[in-house]
Structure formats: structure tokens, C-alpha cells
Image (cartoon, rainbow, N blue to C red; front, side, top):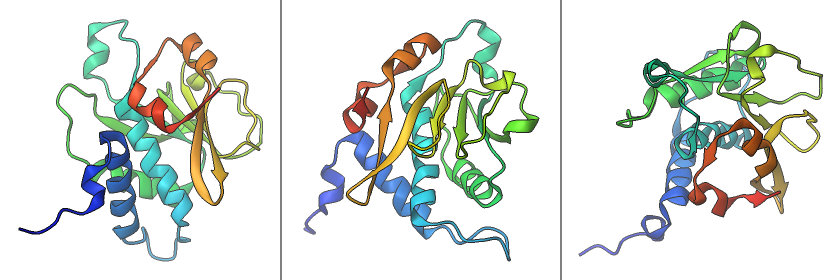
Length: 181
């Protein structure tokens, strides 16, 4: 019998993130001529996709359950293309909404919004959105999750007060990996 690698012994959330990272690093670059993404940005894309598995948005109307979950991005063409590749390659999770990646400036509403710049973003589409900041330098009033580096490792911080105002539920499995604010 072959000894099983240590990765399979990880808790489910860590295993999911590890497998998403492995996949992210194996996916070839997007369009020819497009700038390559760093490993850090590929990992952030994998995290964004995995966040959707561990956050529950409020269902106010039964028709919303059949609607896609919208991930809105600032204009990040290589990042956008890579995240779309990840979304299209994931297997459908029964009982979960499909995912659509859209540019923020074209969105009517967003469920999860990824902000990478310090520019002031004022869009009605993100008012009820779980906002994820690329780093601690990105300052937005409603930031719920913030990426940061700790000893060259990508981590994230969760702002529970913001999530409470958004009326979303976050899995305890996700919170185990986060620095909770």
C-alpha cells in the first residue's frame, strides 16, 4: 500500500485552498501577450472562489436561489481571465448558486467584490456586497475581508462587524483560517 501524502490529512477548508492553489499554479497563462499573474495573485483568485463556498448570503426571495452569485472585479484583465478559468473549471456544487465574474463598472449588483486600488470606489452595485480588499493599503469603508502578507505567506483578515451589517453568515471553517477583527 502506498503511504498517503500529508496534504490529504488537512482539514476540509485547508485542503480546498491547497488544491485550488495547486490547480491555480498548474493552469497555463491566459491570453497570449497578457501579463502573467504572480503566484500571489493566483492564490488570491483561488481564495475568492473558495470564499463563495463558505459564505452564505441572505435569501430574501426564492427566485434569488436560481440567480448566479456575482463576483465583481475592478479592471484587472489578467486576474479577471484567470478567475474566470478557475470558475469554469470547478465542479458544480449541488445546492449552490452558479458563479459569474463581471467587471465592477458593468455590474448591476455584486455579491462579492474584489478591490485592488486605493481609488475611492462608489458604486451602488457594492452596497450590499462582501468586499474583499487586495491589501491593507486598500481603504474602503465596507471592507469585510482583507488580504495581507505575514512572513511572506498570504493571509486574510475578516471584519465580523461589517459581515454582520451585511447579514451574511461565514462558516466557522473559514474563520479558523482568518485573523478575526
